Image (cartoon, rainbow, N blue to C red):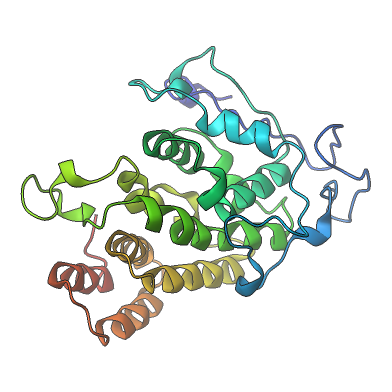
Length: 286
């Protein structure tokens, strides 16, 4: 760990060099050509959006053997200031990057059901920790070239169920970018989960892919997720998708303009949301 990490929370990824096989992480024990141990049940990774199971269904799926342990590590903490992850003696979770990506994908895909036992504030705190490079490096596993592409794509596509099954159900239909006190978008009227719903695409490492070996595949998956999220009938989820488009507009201006033009060509009841989309189209958001 470099000196630049001294003031930050301890990195808890437990990354190990490619080819290192550890017992207890759901590996069969084989190693594929890239040098990574194969997942516990490789066939569980599905790539089509229609194949992503809705919350409440694990039928036919074999979850990662450490999934419950992972959920407790990320979410089962009191909400405090400073948060638990700033404690140098806090818990750690060691796993190879491939396992991290699988666990993140399972968490996102099943968030509607499996995060229901945690409060809005706990889910907000946990997802912020999981997604922000300022707090942990787990999010990097979803773009790491040491992880098979299909596993990374499955994790990215799990972001849509996160919005559909978790944020849409638990977040207030308020616009966070207005940052108002008073009126219909009063900050005090939002749930404790609204902040990460809005800021997810701002903090995730997935916001920068330029020069990545799998840039096109990852980019297209992200654009697909943003498009799906924008179609959800929930104001905060739509705002989050627009925020995501705005964050990547600098790198993909034409694709973002095309997406925003399609949206702006539809009937948009909320004028503040329309204005936000117009600004995202030009990259004028924070």
